[in-house]
Length: 353
Image (cartoon, rainbow, N blue to C red; front, side, top):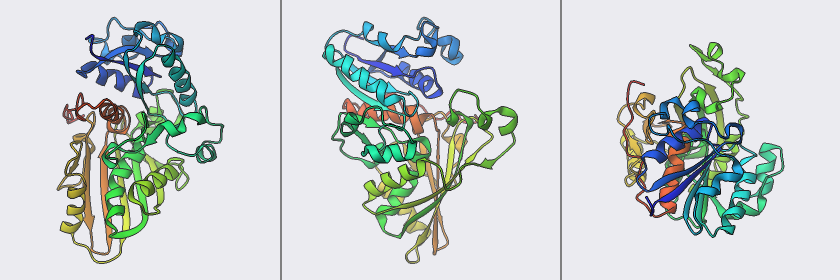
């Protein structure tokens, strides 16, 4: 493993962090060097993630200031951040400074929202706090991998899970010009999307056998999606978004609707998506409507389309923790290190989850 790329996970004790640890373990080119968690420093990883006990039984979480100890000077490092929104930028800034002292060759993929806007003011307007490292914004690009052929920055801010599912559905439509640049999106997410810390929205008695909307037309990821869709398509896109909490742990299903400019057939609409994703191994345009059980625990997105000639519907299903977070981050990291995009991500969905 001497030639491997050393993988470091910041915020490793959360759900996204746990998925990153799982994916890194099976990745042929990444070797886990440090799982960072200040809240669980010194504790065995297996005590937090029992499902990883067979493969990480001897590994423990380390403190934020200790992750460099196991990495030699001049090493190649894949740094993943699963730290919370608002905290990740500062932690990453400190990591970059520390890496420079050891002359590390490092790429970063951040799964928080801290590098999803190119302008400091735009981020601060949405999140209501001062950005933790505005000097780094120009070093990050934010996009879904399928929509950016060439990255020009050393680091990536990964779009959120709702954003990933929505952008994969929206951007081919916006690029086609077949509809108005205004979309109406209804999305349902599993409880893992709210993170490890218990709260009212993820409490099992409230969520089990239940379905409810939250923050309708006021969710903070809507402007993120609109900005990324506009940047990727070249059309000023308006997004009306109503998220829902679903009675399941993993997965996101979104339904996007738009008004057609002229009559469009089902075959024409399907061709738009088949052409857009013909070279994208993690996106499949399915003949039936997408189902969560066919994508959960995989890095796949399943898309389905429908039209009555006058309006268009696009359905998108992903695993929020994999394609929407950890898997998408690994996919980006593969590209940053010029590895095949599918490396470590080719496992099929288990089905019947």
